[in-house]
Length: 94
Length: 260
Figure 1: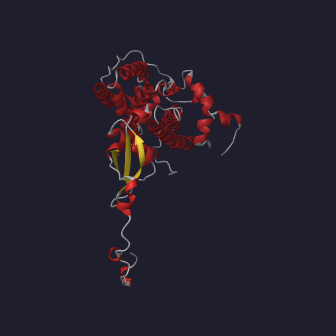
Figure 2: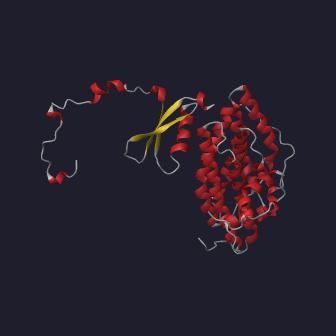
Figure 3: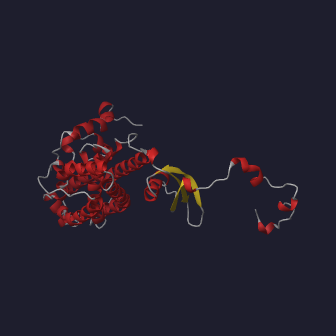
């Protein structure tokens, strides 16, 4: 039966102020039940304060074959990699 | 926690009896629901039902733990759950009804949850602090149980022709077991008089409302109130309880004192 239900991606905000994070996916007949199911599958141990669900089919993903053009920076353009600044001690870890 | 805040005139044995009633409801329904583990129609439903079962078994520990404390004979929640015989159980007959199909399990859950919700809501204001504390803790869980079972009863009732037919059958079949929730006896009267529990009859109006509301949304027809089965609250059970206990208690009966 579950194979007839659409797949949903679940995002949970762990604490106020943090971003929603993708935690997994599940099947449900509609959005309301997806939220209910997400509560049962992913938030039984105080993991969250907010749940988002979105139909997996609504997500547009980049193609693995485009990995090069999208993600490999031009290493010859050193100014894109600001590694040569001295950071004052007061700033701490960046 | 250990000091009783009871009015001196409240009969401890009546209190013990009430705690068995509420604890046994949670224990037996929790066990029934756990029978679905690994068998529910969808993985997500399986997890949700197992959560409900675990909630109920957790509540059992609180209620039966307090029952043992009130009784004062050194019996723990485990003793009470695993070492009593059928006639000593005080759960209502509704919770020992067999699971049937998934729709029937959900219908039983809804009819119970609506009552359980109202009962705990009232118990939050109990004059006995230990009861009020447990009610406070368990009310949130039970509110969620009710949301969920209500939602699914509506979806299935107002679903396909087949799901509608099955839900109506489940409702008709379980209805004669709902009357027992609202019949009080002298124990209830004594505790209600002392402000420790609500009188069982007093929950009926609220329950009727919750149920009528969900049934009309689900397009199901409320059965007429006819003969109502009862007896569980004084230890007179259907044959189903024996099968439940033989599974539930097997380990402690076969290997007394066994621990993990």
